[in-house]
Amino acid sequence: MQETKRLQIKGMVCKRCISILFDELSLIGLEITNINLGEVFFKGQLPQDTDESQIQQMLQKYGFELLSDKKVLLVESIKSLVHKGIDLQAQSRDTLKFSEYLSNELNKDYAYLSAVFSDYEGITLEKYIITQRILKVKEQLITTDKSLTEISDELGYSSVSHLSRQLKAYTGFDTNHFKNLRNTITTA
Image (cartoon, rainbow, N blue to C red; front, side, top):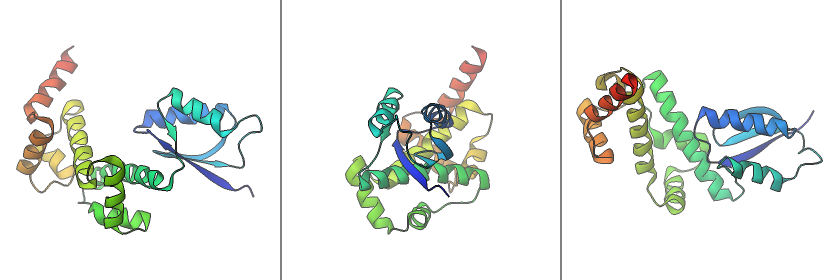
């Protein structure tokens, strides 16, 4: 049975990134078994005519980076799990306690994860999570007809007013601004 190996990749942020990397890595002969944001699993070895530097060059062409430093890998895993957690929360509509979720998924103390994240990213893990949630809120306001109440419930906010204040604090704009953007996009 062939051993499954993993590449960790920085810069994967969406499904299109997954699609691009699946296509490109398959073209060079990797037998991909699974691909998620931030990681690619494949069977066996790299093809004989391919080395890690060629993979790095291909990744850089698309704005990605192959990771090897353990703490950088940890930070990228945290980012990937934050995105996954926000999506899980939106699907289940259950409030997700990110400190417990990240600690359980990575088998590390949250204080350690938070310290490593802050050292490498220059912002606190809490602020990163809030920023990613706000990005999801903006996306929902611009691309769907969901009300702020629905979005608030979906993303686990304690109240609509809390979401509104956070959106204004992080973007400088209120919900009407993003709804107007949606209207501008749909009428264009």
